[in-house]
Image 1 (cartoon, rainbow, N blue to C red):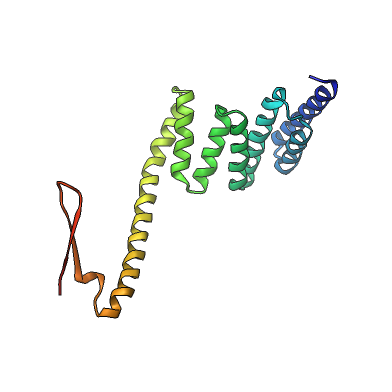
Image 2 (cartoon, rainbow, N blue to C red):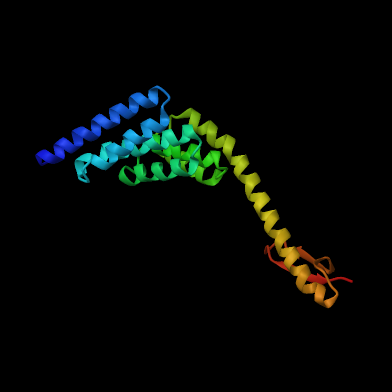
Length: 184
């Protein structure tokens, strides 16, 4: 590593340490600035991957504390691009997804954490808590889609004096396919 890269890496580390101190004092906006400075001065070389991934993950935590969940997801993702097995970044992104009710994405991140650390009981509990919420959201989205399709079908069929209610769909239990019959 060249001398100027070492100097830049030392400056980045100083900014990160200052950001950590500010975070500890609850000064999240100021901590964000310091982590951002660290990312600006850290050279884009293999030896700086660790500090860059840490700074992105720390920014993600600041954004979580500030309620800026989309930004938290972006910084967590950048940390994971640098270090795909970074558990803290996965946890932070999972938490941000949960706050935004992106339950499927949160569960995916938490399952990745379990792949890396099977002993994490808290993560298992969180997944168990989120799975019914994800299923409920899927059902709600499915019902909304069915309702929209019915409305669209009724608007088309209405021109012919019919509605969706004039048709009955019956599922074949053996094949899963549907047969539709017309009723007056």
